[in-house]
Length: 123
Image (tube, rainbow, N blue to C red; front, side):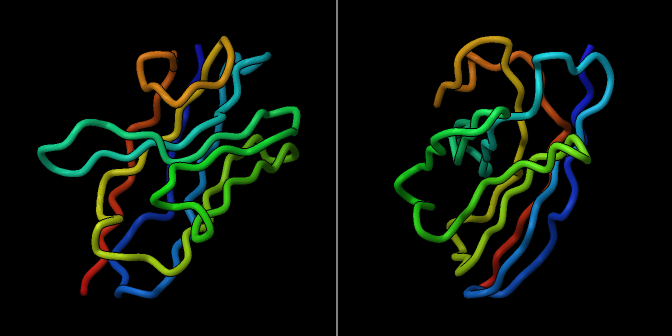
């Protein structure tokens, strides 16, 4: 079993920055947090960014590309998301996710999820 715990959410003004972290514990083996998704009220969960745990090409949703950066800290078993130039439309609960298979932009392809952390961007 893999446990994922997000942290770093909060309230920030438009144009500000936040850094999210997702710590993995348990039987991590080859299953490490590898993606961030978000879900706004009344909307479906949507892909934000992904990165292979072993390194490689990152992927971003068009809406966050150039503003968000996903990274990994292997020493701490942590996945991070640096969010800059935040906009009110970035307001959502942010989730980290781990997959046993290939990285994907579809939430259904992920096996483990954190509990989520709220990000609120005021205008």
